[in-house]
Structure formats: C-alpha cells, structure tokens
Length: 91
Image (cartoon, rainbow, N blue to C red):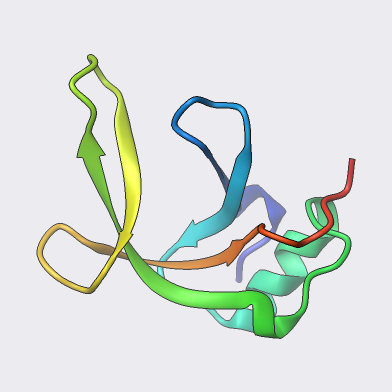
C-alpha cells in the first residue's frame, strides 16, 4: 500500500515548473490516486493516472540525472504517474 510519503515530485530541468508526480513501480491506479490527492492535487481523476517506464540519464554534472519517459527496455524502470498539465494543484 502506498501513501503520500511515497509520491515523488518531478520538476523541469531548470527547476521551476512541476511536471508530474510519480511512484516507482506499477501500483494500483486507485491507490496512487488516493495517495496523490491527499496532499498534492485537488482535481485529479482515475483517467489521469498512467503506467509507464522511465530512465535516468546523467546530465554531465556531478551527481545529476534527468528522468525521461521511455518504452520498456534495458535500464528502464516502471512508474505510475500523473502528468500535471491542466490539473489544478493544491497550494
């Protein structure tokens, strides 16, 4: 079972805009929705939650990586996420 402490925030590379919330692994969309709406989102529906894969790629700066959504494959890990475009965030 996941809760809001498992939710990871993903920001733009420049660090200014929130892009998505995600959790590593494919979990129940309903569980994810319940966890993310507790503290993070006010208007999110089950149809907004997706399963996908991501890969971390080094940026060239020490200890810094960028996460990219990708197809299942070598180096990719499963995620459950919500893309925040068009969703109202609790302030």
